[in-house]
Image 1 (cartoon, rainbow, N blue to C red):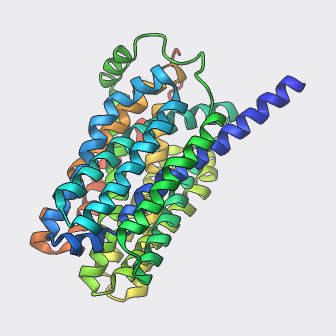
Image 2 (spheres, rainbow, N blue to C red):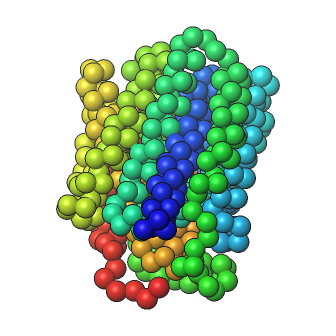
Length: 396
């Protein structure tokens, strides 16, 4: 009984540690995103140029993701998360200096590239460890880990809005955020689950190659891609679209972004109950529909309270696609690292293509109306949702 108690205590500690690293990952990203409107003005870039600048994050992530599964397999989630957090922090600080001190697009882009590299490794590592904890506990909790991510983004956006409203320089805000991002994950890492016996026995590279040939894994990746675009477009463009489309001050645009993030956090907390009761397919179809309605309200709402309501509905709709996709990729423990790496790589293609595509559309139809791309792409992507159902039989 004492052994079981220690094991249960270890899983609970791991659950809490995973929640912390999810939250800090979100905090790092939202700290930068909350200051995008001011960074855009400081760098004097157009919407299209801003889209190309934000592409640096996506390029860094896309380069990191195919290697992340192998890194976790080789060094473990603890080391991967700790190292990625330091890289993330350096990127946030450099991006703040590039925009707030040097006013240089290339310095800012270098910081965002480092942020993308760190985020790519960090995302895969924390999702693999989160899936392991979920299996140990025996019920759906992955969306709550992603709620931790969203909670971190809410805090990051809230601090960013406050700093913008108080006139705190971008570099001061982002360097302070970077310190927390580097230190706290290192303190939480010892409580994460160690390497398990159910990890892949084949070489990491071979496992990833096999995963790229699996139809179910690819379909889950396509579903995650659509939901990553739904979430990522709001992260990158919602604040800017509200400022440009409705003529509100940057701090109020950051508040609108915080509304989206708060609703997404709530959706992830409640979503675990809905997933266990109704299953992945029905819940994902419902959230996709909800996200589309929210986007339409943001674009055509005209009355600011209705627009902010649309941001909240959009956030609820975007809440479950990514975490459910990660759980689906990790359904078979023996292949979790490779499949999570593949699904994450496909999903992050949205972050690669999204910023320049939205920037191009914004140059032609305005930033606000460019958001309609999200609602349009949700329709065909719904066809991939059934792939996320747990496989009935699979050898581990």
